[in-house]
Image 1 (cartoon, rainbow, N blue to C red):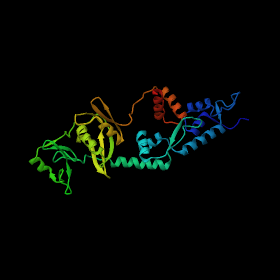
Image 2 (cartoon, rainbow, N blue to C red; image 1 turned 90 degrees about the vertical axis):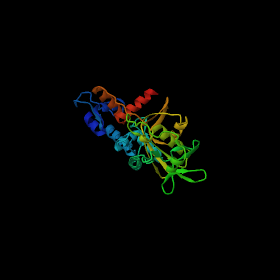
Image 3 (spheres, rainbow, N blue to C red; image 1 turned 60 degrees about the vertical axis):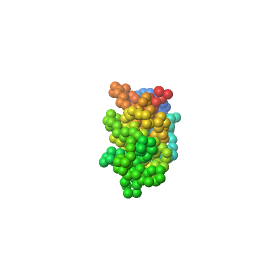
Image 4 (cartoon, rainbow, N blue to C red; image 1 turned 120 degrees about the vertical axis):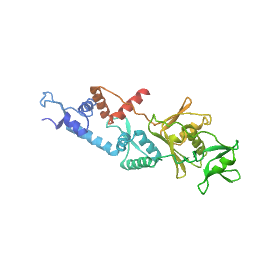
Length: 324
């Protein structure tokens, strides 16, 4: 009497995989083929006990939590965004095997952690400033912009308690901006306008506390390098929160060489690198398109499923492994 069994299609249905993956599991010894020397069944069948055990083990792994790739797909973002949220929230994400019998590990995000990540991503999306609140179009100046007064004294444009624009001098006297224009030689130390970036999509986000020395360094670099056309900003909870339009920006003599290092310390998402005489703001990751013949694609998908990964994540890991 033959033992209880499944055919390949039934195994694929039970395990949620493709038929080629079923045979891959059999070749690895994870499930056994039914011994049928006389070919009575007419097709290859697999031991039901093995299939049920494998399904139970897979369900146990799935219950531990979803992968970062699955969570990213759920929220419609790149996996890097989820990783940034995990780091910002300081979540302790446990590791589990990619699949049963696999030595490789993946992160397992619990439902509670996934909810926290979702709330964080929603907040990030909804709280990004929609315009540059520092720029004052009527006067064509920007808050905290640096000027030279009388050709030698560096001063910064601020607001007093009555929200008037002007400069606080060394003796704490407040000099209104319009009066400074009329009665003093007032010279901006850098231009605050640059050509608007159109080629690349997305923003690089940063947040720097206003009490840090880096605050003025970063703000001066934003004005001098990017220009008010290329970043949105506002003050929130004691921080300057800014989103810089991704692109390539030429440097000028006003920006110190170590300014990029200061930038990098306060970036929340995205990245900035120095290349030649330019700064380049871009996403933390980059999307590429891979094109395969249909039969090759199906074979690769089978390999990905055998490791319990979405095809995109499996391909990324293979390429990174090949690079190393």
